[in-house]
Image (cartoon, rainbow, N blue to C red; front, side):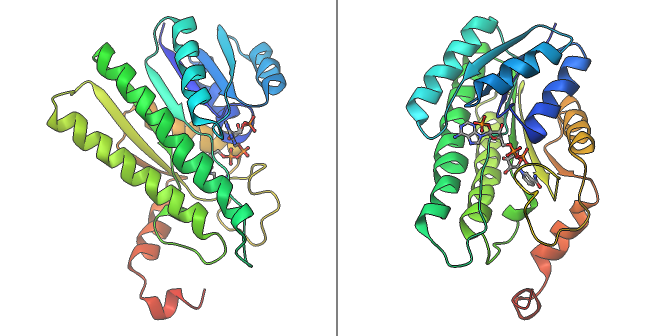
Length: 240
Ligand SMILES: NC(=O)c1ccc[n+]([C@@H]2O[C@H](COP(=O)([O-])OP(=O)(O)OC[C@H]3O[C@@H](n4cnc5c(N)ncnc54)[C@H](OP(=O)(O)O)[C@@H]3O)[C@@H](O)[C@H]2O)c1
């Protein structure tokens, strides 16, 4: 039976990903800060699951928590680094930029390093990171969030390069780039378009993971927006 760890499994995309993997027979490791939500989710899953309190604001303790979870599960095939946060920040206050830097950059890196070293020792595995279409081009309302998601995509590409060059051809990297998905993170956003349900997003992320995709846009049509965002000239982009 295959085993997956989902970091950031207490709500939204991570919670529904846990349901997708469990429905398909995976043993699931659930990690994040809100232990009570993880315990509740555990009771809903048809397969065996493990829970672990893990806070990415304290990267060192998060590394310890991930190690413990891996040990408790015995062996892990896939590690999904889904945790993330961000705020619209029109006046640009540090207190609103900081969580994106601490969770999405420092916290993500701590988890990616741990997962990498575990899979190198094991000789095979799969790391999935959740970046965003927001990482394609910076946006004035949330510069730290977009920058942090660009960092995640870049970091994952760096790992893919490392594994290819060092001959770890059984360690896979998947960069998931969602557009808008209706979750706690986005429910108070102003205007959104092409908004996916969390169930549909989780199902597409699950399929992309199983198929070991390098990069997947979720939902798929967001690939078009990513292309436009990347190539649209500044004089048009700066009016948005
Ligand atoms: N929704 C969208 O439109 C959208 C679009 C692009 C990318 N994404 C990305 O998708 C991922 C999931 O977001 P979501 O939309 O599902 O939002 P969500 O419902 O708010 O879920 C965020 C998850 O991250 C965890 N998390 C936050 N801070 C953490 C910390 N300090 N330590 C450990 N875990 C932490 C939360 O768990 P705890 O609070 O229990 O710790 C929660 O499980 C994020 O990386 C987000 O940036 C979302």
